[in-house]
Amino acid sequence: MLRLRATFKKTGRAKYISHLDLNRCMLRIFRRSKLPVWYTEGFNPHPYYSFALALSLGFESECEIMDFNITDDNMPLSVIKDRLNEVMPEGMGIVDIAPQKNKITVIAKAEYEFDLKTDDVDGIFEAVEKLLAADEILIEKKTKKGIKTVDLKPDTEIVSLEKADALVKIAMRLPAGTKTNYNPTLFTEALKKSCEIPFEMVNIRRTGILCENNEKFS
Image (cartoon, rainbow, N blue to C red):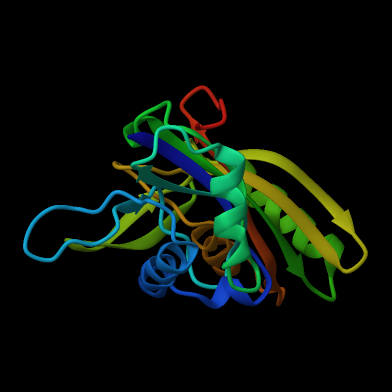
């Protein structure tokens, strides 16, 4: 049996496919591909596959991770990739397929890029810098146990911050994985509370799934 890990994109219209609908979508994709996918055992067998991290609705990504198994040990990875891409919906596609290497539990961070659209670029840029320079960035976050106040500051890594036309462009790394998951919208919520300049968060993309040392997860 081949234990495989696919990296796939979810862009354009596909960003509006929810995580629940993504599961149903992949079920149809595997059936239409006619690949020898390994099925779970038991009363209701179904193709086995799992995703590393749920992607928020409306976010684009070219680094989503899906694990699945193929029962034919001799099937070339290029054939598997082509068969899946032939039946993928618009906005989705397999970027790469390789044998599984690390366990999902080693995922520690996710990298995001997003833009802040505003009529006052200089003002928002300064507000972002001021927020990042603060001793703490407190925001309320929903958890399984209810609403909890968290401090984003210790775990927010800024990769880049720049101005371009009517946008402030930000790239940041946030905790992700089995223990802690922060969404970049938490940061923009904190920004809205700290300044009165109107802005809109647009073009949100997940650009990387990383291990603790910032190495690409594979």
